[in-house]
Image (tube, rainbow, N blue to C red; front, side):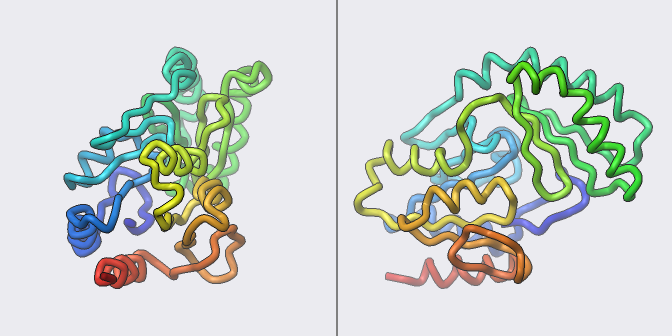
Length: 232
């Protein structure tokens, strides 16, 4: 929904996209959820829209008018996440352009602003810092666009979250899911919704994806949502 920027804190929803989402949220034809790697508290601070659902931490937490979910394993893993954060701060200090984002239930190591040497150091030192936790299956690691995600070791992702929403809201048989995403973690949703709905990868042509369709950028996303809203 928002353009990729160097710092995660700088990402904001374009005004026109926000306007269209507000219109869709107020319509009886659509049920709107924002599915993100960010924590819900942060999502709400950036997207002040009523009538939509928020899924944060890659689906580990969910809030809407009818649904509330918090993964129990993720909650229990909070002490381990705190310990890993301290270790990462120690090992990665001195590397310019690195941001360690504490999402409450998970951690994200952003290195988009680091140079090539710094990026390689981040990847090497980060893995070394969490190696003991990985060997004990206390965490799992996923990688996105210039980001390393450290999450609880649960078989839960954006795809499973989407199926959970459809089931709990009893929409599986009568709704057409439409999912848009631009990150590697969105591939889980593309796979889960295969033959069930419309999946759209947002990014450059040629990128490997499980999505059925593609849009070039967030401007095209806004146009797509506008056209979707006009359908009656």
